[in-house]
Image 1 (cartoon, one colour):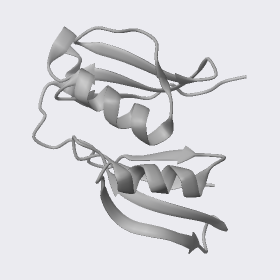
Image 2 (tube, rainbow, N blue to C red):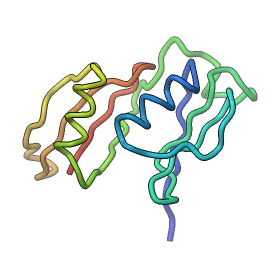
Image 3 (cartoon, one colour):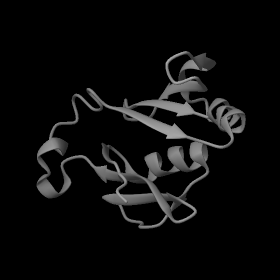
Length: 121
């Protein structure tokens, strides 16, 4: 079995951790100011890495975050997740709607560092 554990570069680990924790009801499991691992029921959803730390070649320049990247999260509680996003005053691009390509309901929003997120059932 193979699975991905995406790592994105962010400006502020604690602030981004809270954003994703509030949105996805996930748990931070690593701690620290340069790296965090967010999990749901011990499964890694997303890792957060501070820009310019550790000399990773794709994390050196924060001027163009997320170019060519969409983070897709499948959730069991789409409407509750949407309500949390609204309560957080997240930058919602499009409310809950039916996607004819995926045949699923979803909504889209931007995170604090400019990453485009799709939250889908």
